[in-house]
Length: 394
Image 1: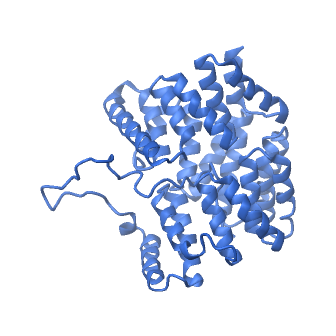
Image 2: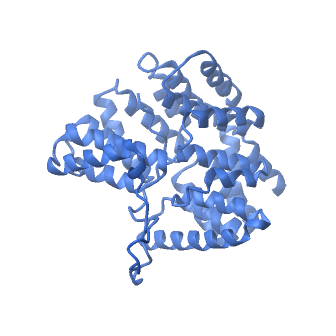
């Protein structure tokens, strides 16, 4: 069973040209020499992506054939997850076009549609698909796991845990425990969630993709608990299973930055500058290293242009990342806080809470800080980095 990584684990569906489009009205660049390489297409060196290209061609000849469309969507989702390239999500949505608005779409099309809406941070739209889908098909495990993920992102932990519990007997135990560990670890049961997940990983083998997902989750829970040795071990185990996974790279980079190891981030991310979220983390590392000032300045300008272009398109998927950019790199606390507040209204993961606290602290906004402290108290959140940020305030 394929694990589709959750919202902020984040298949972020931005415009297809996010990394490549020039600003509106700019003069197109025409190379003076045919030998100049504009872009290296990823499928050139990846047999799986080359196969996806052939599948797309077959679908173009039969656009309403769901049996052809489904594998195209799944392969595009996997490519987007692995590479962090939003163009593959655009391809997935295009493949679903005949069923995108259909009220009577087949269940598999509805599930994939909900997954793509999740990636756009249209969580209400995703639930609007998943709720009736699961009412009609209560044993549909991937839909159940996807809804649990969406509910966790929204902070509806009890609802998410009910969906996870209903997976028992339908999927591998590691999937059930991993599903449960996410919301449990964010609502006062971090130690029990980590122990259960680490225990099942130690005694049960599983599909490499499932193990990589579970190892990454275990790493994040361990880091939130302040067990940095365990977190490092889980991150390394996950990377041994899938070193290309863009979400995993971002999570590990965050861990390294928190541990004041910016130089270790450079080799991890230097080849991922087309991915906005990874470029941000690379720039955050470069900012701390005097010998990287030149490339940092270049990456800072590149990020500013990308965020500005996204805003002109009405794309608000990367509010959290832009808030961090505005706060840490640009030093604009008030702009960062406005973005962090907008982001918090949409999704409520620990990283969303953290940037809200940091921006509120920098802007001296007591009301925003109260939002954060009330949330922590209500859900008994255990997160070393988040709580450390609040200690600075006090």
